[in-house]
Length: 422
Image (tube, rainbow, N blue to C red; front, side):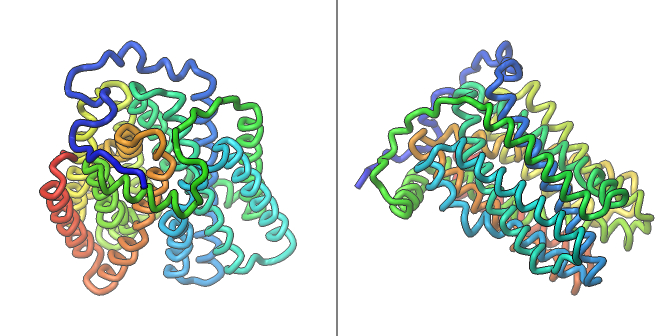
């Protein structure tokens, strides 16, 4: 059995020491590298389609059933594979060529979107088919962590991982801000059939890019004779020996259980408390995405490796504080300010999350640890159900206030147990 050194605040990657590193002159050099641009672009393509189809499926399900619960369940079903298959995806990514794994996922998603387009053209698509499609899309989502971002780390190198993840965060936040609007436009003008055809077209772009993509994956030093489940167990043992890595993953759970689910309550507060019409509610929702996009740009421009852990931890703290303020604000303009600041905190968390996990993990374990990161992100449905249940009994403002207070308490507990993360 492999034994592990117990790593604490000083990372096995020396780039994370407190001394300054000269990354400024190389900060945007990644944008001149074709391999990075390809990986960055296919991530943007997948994110656009994800938000496009999430909105289309949500609107369609509500039109058919009239049930907000069934709409919410579609999101839960889409996120479930992160928790159920994240670790398995990470172990598989270390057993097979990651580019091939990504390519297979894009082909499967293109076929699924094209099939749903044809189905919706001829018949009414049943809810179970859309639920199955959401689940398989969630399975594909797990490969973004274990395969695409792991290759990005290899392309960037340890000194530029933070910049690479920040650039990736810009696209994910930007598509999260623009994707729903694009989805609404396509659904209105070309219907469900056209929406899925557009999704298939985007996936086809990703397929062509991956076919042309050339990257020699580095040998990780992992035991290739191990089985999939043996790899998974070894990965968990490795995480347990690395306190900084364990604390980082715990902060991810705090954010996804008590932080991010607040987004589901923005429309409720906008309509019921602030008494806004649909268009201003949409603008209110976009404020968080705008703040996150701005934050990702600022982090890409000015962050240094010795700032990564503080950005990560205090970004979540700022996010939860803004949830608390937003929950009881009665003026739309001030609510937008809180959401923009909230987005800044969310951007710091999102950009540093994968960067810290990759930097504090030995290459032999990166795929598996990124798979565990997907599992931690997959705890989000617990928070969505929690805030939804409280909102139905106590009202949305009280539910958000309680969620924020619980999250701050949980974050402080993590800081006490794992002081390496702050």
